[in-house]
Length: 341
Picture 1 (tube, one colour):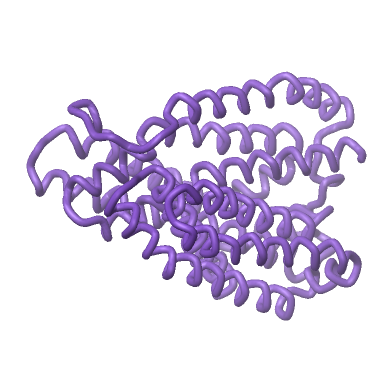
Picture 2 (cartoon, rainbow, N blue to C red; picture 1 turned 90 degrees about the horizontal axis):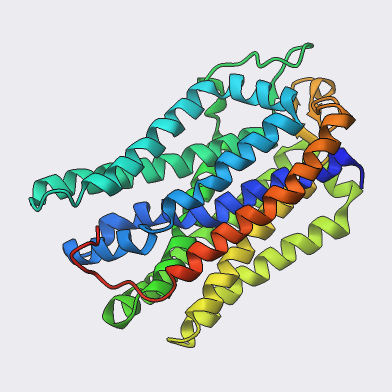
């Protein structure tokens, strides 16, 4: 494995970590309107309250790694997706503000306003992340200098929106299983019933998206022809771990941890399927694929990649240890106190 491939993998690991950890945060926002009463909504919010800001460390780290290892890719994507990323930033800010502000007053109107803000911003964030990923797979218009030549509206085509909807469905399923892990009693039973909707919704989106991607993206067809066994095996594992979720939920209390792990693996397999399908390309160009950015023409120098590999060797264990410590400290079921959100 050369340095360019190594950094392609590391950047993918960081963004996968963000999607796996902050994904259920965003999904909780989408599920919040379906909670009954202020107590249930507080339980939902306090399930993610101690950890949501730490989860976003993975997004910052992933963005930093992309900038350092693949500056040309970073420049093209962030300039081309500038409007979309500004909307994503606003949504993430409102989401954070809503969590902190909603419990500062007791009035129902005040709390409802911030609950709506939290829910809308969470769903918008998930949708925009999916739209960005969809455009990376589909391809974006790049000129001969590999600069973005499209517009914000050109990014909102049917395929990217389908990926956006799939991302929302995935995060909602993921959040449903995380909340199942963090609750007990009648609320846990209700969340178990919700999986009968959230898991099939994601599974349906995943299968439709897979079919559309294979038949509508020529470069993905080429990757499938080159690596049929690898991509086929990843797809099969992604399907099996998703199907294992309802099987674990049906076993009742005590198995919700296994269901959540299966959800995590489903998300990891989806990201792995994406990475294996596009490698070594990082940004496909349309209509001329020759203008695409890959791990070689979009990367830093070998000297920079080598130096950053040592930095990652030191930094990654710190990020993992921090995340593991936070989750260990705040393990267990949610209990509401006077200091809760």
